[in-house]
Length: 195
Ligand SMILES: [Zn+2]
Image (cartoon, rainbow, N blue to C red; front, side):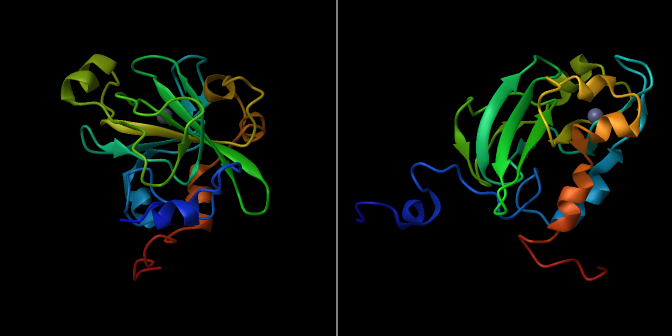
């Protein structure tokens, strides 16, 4: 028996937050190019809920009922906020170049992490709704899904998620999640042949 597991020595410096050097799918160990097929509502689309006509601040990704949701890379849980059906987990990430961004996971339940917790790509954050919860959420014809955002700033206190009326206003606080996956696409597994 090893007194200290080798993996901890390699991956978890005690003081610094875990770095975000590889971005993967919030649905686990799948190629990030598979995410294109999950998206049914894109960044910047006009939305009717809350402030009518606001720009969609993230992407909606279809998943299976009860699908486990993972952080897109290692980081620190900074918020578990709102309530059903908008319960949201927010994770802060530090890139190797020193820049910071946050990822946000909405329409989840059974949250398994707490604020202040360090997470890695294999930490289960929460799960998507089951069929009964999905009916209760009243998402209309939308399938069970993850609403995923990339936050470039957080001093909007979340308001950009429901009130940005122009792309300029939205991009001040959010970026297109597909750009995040595009720039590091396939880093966890080989690119698909058609790329
Ligand atoms: Zn959405």
